[in-house]
Image (cartoon, rainbow, N blue to C red; front, side, top):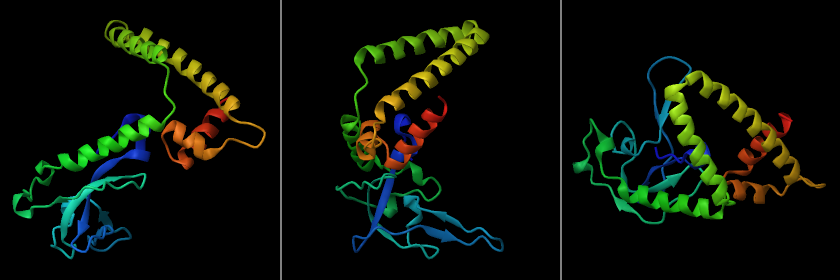
Amino acid sequence: MWEFEEFGADHEGRPGVLLADGTEPGPVYFDAGSGPTVHQSTDWWIYDGTLRAPLATEMRAACSCGWRGTPRYPVDWEAVDRRRPFLYDTSGPEGDWDAHMADVQARAVPVPADVNALFDQLETRFTVLIEDEPLAALRAAATLERLTQRLAADAVYNVDDVDGPEWDTVAQGLGVSRRTARSRLTRYALRR
């Protein structure tokens, strides 16, 4: 799984697979015996044609937002180590997902350079403070949390207008789904 910390679960990437007919298979279910739960997986290496799983012939990048990469990469099952399939080269799909993430970032509202520089300074200073004075670092982190909560609530107030925010615009600006944008803004507003 490939992750981009800023966008969280809205943009988790992975190698997705395609069957010979070009379709993307659904999850593979594993019945582990009696009980109410059935394990499922969409890990690319599950689609090897064994244990009732379909046989994937190609892989491509996939993102939890629904985006799928266009380039397709053949899967050479002879080269896949069945005990360590994660060692198989998935750099092609990962590079495509990286390009998707660059596009998501480009469409998001940019954080001003001076604010990013302040974040970098804070992180550098906190790193030293954590080593030298961990209790002071915790106290400073609590102050930073309070400041962040207040600023976020004020920003939500300024985003909202008489008819409510335009959720597609807010979601794109934050680089997340509409659902996550609504949840985030609601959480910030309720802390006011």
